[in-house]
Image 1 (tube, rainbow, N blue to C red):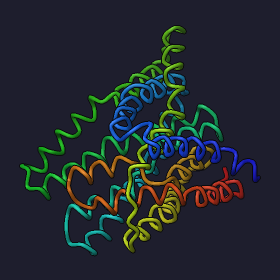
Image 2 (image 1 turned 60 degrees about the vertical axis):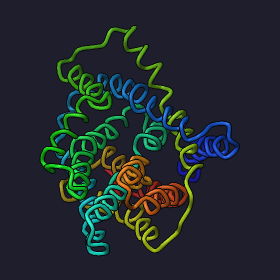
Image 3 (image 1 turned 90 degrees about the horizontal axis):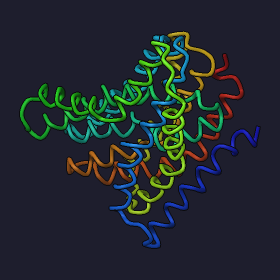
Amino acid sequence: MLNRILGPILPVAFVIILGFVAGKRGKLNHSDSLLISRLVLNWIFPALLLVGMASTPRSQLLDFRFVVATFIGIMGMYVLAFAIGWYRYRELKAATLKGFVNGYPDAAFMGIPILQAMFGPGSLYSVLVLNLVASLVMIPLTTMLLAIASGEGSGAKAFVSSISTAVRRPLMWAPAIGILCSLLAIKLPPVVADSFNLLGKATPGVSLFCLGLIMSSVKLKLSGEVWMNMGLKLVLHPALMVAAALILSVKGVYAQQMILLCALPSATIPAMFANEAGAYRSEATTSILISTVLSVVTFSFAIYLIDGGLAAA
C-alpha cells in the first residue's frame, strides 16, 4: 500500500523540485516557462492525446454517463466556488476567478504522469474528458464573464469567440482526430503512430519540470481566502466527484481516475487569467502553489481511500 501511494508521487515531486531549483538559481526564467508551456500545450501534449485516443476502444468513447458525471464534478465545483466568491466579494471578476481556480484541476501537468504510473496509457481517456469539459465549457464561460466584468462588448460574443479559439487549438482538434479514428476503426500508420508517440512521451517530465519553474516565480501571500480554496479544491472537489459518480452509477477504474484527477491541485492556467484580468492575482497564484505542495499529503490520502474501496468497482 505504501509503495502504491508514494510510488507515483515521489518522482513527480522530484521533477517539480528540479524545475523549482532551476528557476530559483536563475538557470531558467519566467520567459522560459512560458515557452515550455506553449511547447507542452501546443505540441507534445496534443500528440500524446491524438495517439492515445486513436488507440482507445470505441466502447469507452460512448460511455455518456461517465462524461456527464465528469461535467457535474468539474462544473459543479466551479459554480459552487463562484457562488461563494460572489457572496464574499460581490465582484464578478473575483468570483469568476475563484470558480476557475477551484474548478480546474491540474490534469495536464500532474494528472498524466501520476495516472499513467497507476493505471497505464488507458488513463489518457479520463484526462481527455476532463480537458474537453474545461476547454469547451469552463474556459469560454470564464472568458465571457471576465469580458462582461470589464465591459468589453457583448458577453455572448466573447463566449462564441472563446469557443472558436478553443476549437482551433491543437489540444482540441488533435484528440478529436484520435476520437474519429477510434470511432471509425481507423488505425494510424505505424510510422505516424510511433512518431506522435515519441513526441508525446515527453509530456509528463517536461510539464512537471515547467510546473516547478512556474512555482519558482510565485510570491507567497497566505490569507483566509487561500485556506478556503485549499478546502474547496483538495477536499470538497473530489468529494463532489464521488457524489456525481454515485448518482450516475459510474463505477470501476474510470470513476477512480476522475476522482483522483479532481483531488489534484489547481492548474496554472487560472493564474494567467488572473494576471491578465488584474484581479485575484495573489489569491490565485498562492492558492495554486500551496495546493500543489499540500496535494502530496491529500492526494496520498485519496489514493489510500481509492484502494480502500471508496470508488471500487
